[in-house]
Length: 357
Length: 251
Image (cartoon, rainbow over all chains, first blue to last red; front, side, top):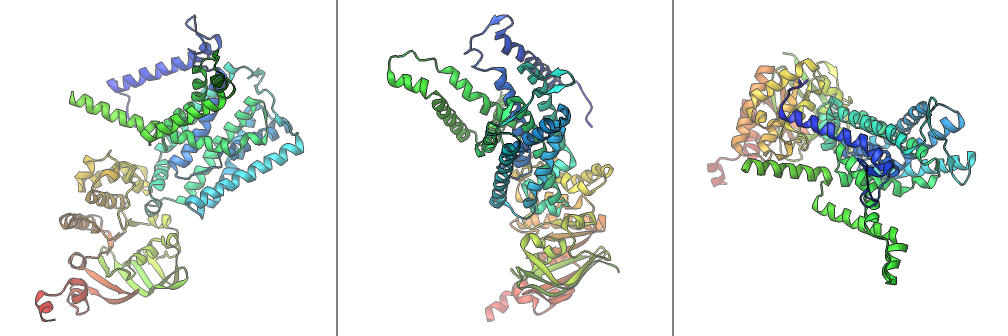
């Protein structure tokens, strides 16, 4: 493989890495103390964000990564991603609440359960293509959420399934900072793992399969096997995220995994850029954080205008959603390739400009 | 001379309705180049699909006969296993992986090679097609038709196939480029000793390139023999090689 040479480029890459590492390590301190280097920050300066939102974003990043691997890289469109989150949440209830397994083992079991359900859900991909396959993933969504509902009502109650605070040994993961310390390395690990898998021989074959199934088959790629494998891996990660999601919320009902929940991941990878792993991270960040940021920008209205008051206070949530969706639409009109496509375009323009200068 | 590809009494039907191929027998000898000729709809592509195992992707079925490659029965085998046995393919319409780089395209083709041979394989392709070396990190979809055809050829030859199936190489390409690519194809045949079955609309070109030829008409072999025999035969002349101006004048 490539040797590490101290070119200016690799130096710059290291600099970025250190910088990002420092930011990510310092972030929880800023968020909990609500101050930067001892200087207190207002809520608006903190973009109306808290560590809880960051943690939920990290969990969503796992979902977006796994869906982009499946849809953007393997070319299989799925609207069944909520089902795999639900699988993880249900596996957690079984292996933790009912069987009392320790937290790390529960996570592992949830991932395995996800891989199993995902491989089964991927079976139709061997026979049907395109829109018909999308419909089959929709069917998976309803089957799994129905099973979840029945399970919830049989062993728990209408209020939902309660989850205990996870602990590793005697160390309880009970504060947002501890969650952050658990989730961040996990996201990095999954990201690196998926990236390595795409660079492998099999990953390349998968991208070839996405570009042209028939040609890939003619080159000796076993398309059916790769499809099932992509589905299994993707849903294992989604299921792991579902388990973490359930633990984090500490109470989950079947309604949490509705069809909107599945569609938001599709939105994330479209915003971030199909087929780009780092794009999925950005997409998840935009989807989870931007509404809150928009909400923070509108000041608490002290206006006497009744209409404005009503709009900004009572219907604030709707207003935020409205602005957010408009922003997303406008963004996608000007950057159809998502954030990933946009950054490639900017990079090309930058090199062209520098070469011209 | 031993045969690489042996097709015996092959019949194919699509959706169980009507025959696309009927009782076709054909041999490709070791190191030989065989041309498969015929008009549109004669069954050329169907024959390639039946041999490569891609028939079921097109809802077709082998309803009779057998295909042997290197003495092994291959009809009914999944397509990806055939590639591992040494069957290479340059599909109709090139079908390069447009979003992947040129080198990644070649590496997909090299996936059946042991890792230690991949570098030599790449070098061999780049030696034959220096243009691909220039464009190795470019997305394949951005290249011209001729370059994409070179890539499709390189992608197929990198795995050192024992049998290469070439479908409509000249489709949509300028005549000069077609001739250049055919020259390279001959080099591949000579250096690797690859046997080839070449499907071609341009009968003149195919007959000057191949040693023997088969003519398909409505799913049946109506003519076969050495390239010279086929070229000289009366059935061939008017409809496939173009009539003489003088003959046309008298008609």
